[in-house]
Image (cartoon, rainbow, N blue to C red):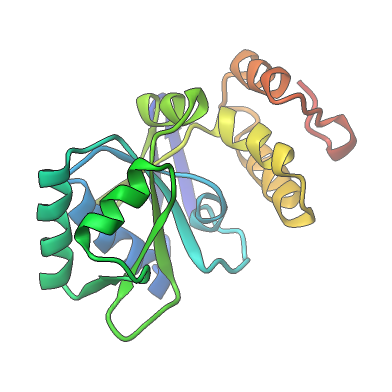
Length: 199
């Protein structure tokens, strides 16, 4: 697998697509027809080759109105997806409005699933306003900026999250905007020196 990084875009070449990759790419292609989105957290490092599992794909979307969500809901049903939450379309939309997450999977499965939530804070807004396009052959998807992803993983603080942060730093340390990374580390009150993330 090879990565080609340009400002605002990463091309991944010679990647062997996994079942998880195909699930995410198929879903995001559909999602993009309805709303801007950005994938954050665990799947980002998996996308770049880190060997670790994940059950859900954390995805932030811009606010959409009730009618747009209803149309999206119907489309998902037609395309073989369902919501894991035991709610009707009205209940699901209200969950999103309340800042809760909803989960979507392919019929007859539970894992993997997409975890959707509306933008809720400045970090979410920055992620979606400055999202990175990742191109995989004929397909594409959007992820949060690496400059925010690394500090956020350090902020979460579990062993797995710290390992994710180190992995992203090792891959992108020569490509990212270090000043921006430093700003987010300060905003989230995290440091990376002990893990080799020196900015």
